[in-house]
Image (cartoon, rainbow, N blue to C red):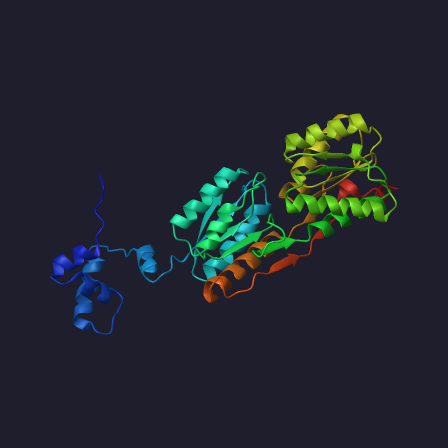
Length: 343
């Protein structure tokens, strides 16, 4: 049985007033007498009238809603980014609509269409693994909807973005492995069209070069970086270079898969194979041994991105010059890479 929800028309009919008078009374308009306001509010409370906040906001040219598109909310990274976004957005009086692309470019485009149809005031987006076509972003900008990218972004464009210094994170992780005595360091990399994967790989390559170590193609494996990808990649790497002594992975999921293969082969971590990853997932402190990883400043990334978006909404998207904020990573050294502690 459906329950009828009282509307402004219902209030107007029962009070024998016009809809516009009731609407003004509810909004405490100065031209409406106190007696009329009292009558309207008494009936509104009696009928449990609930104003349509979205419709009211749209009449004012605002939905007070921000759209967020993330590749997924598995793991800790995007969940914490969204937490940072919601904290600042809610403090500013905005609601947040969250969409997942599930790493699918077509779904990402549908997410954007949904948010545009919902008339959100601004959009925050992190690209999917399979996104190569950016026309849906051009549509957002054509409609002059404020847009900020984060983490996975389109490089060399005039779209505002918040990113981590992924290159520095990769460089520091590999330099740490080298300092621990590792010389045959494999890399589990991700799709190189993605800025984060490309920059982490470049940090790996430059750290090797800086320490006069060769960049061996047989120590490289690129995939979508799932746990299964990590297992398969590690098996292939061992088959190609059985004497590798360390792994730097572009993310921690693939590193867990690699760890399983190392253990299955009866090798010790970190004495035989040292491990370092990227993302600082919650499970890093629960594995045996605990995983060394690069922290991505998740919540700070979310807070910074939404603050940029709110500034664009306040000033107008065409009045705020596009800019990029680069956060600095932090290498968290744990047992999986600490060879020197065991000597």
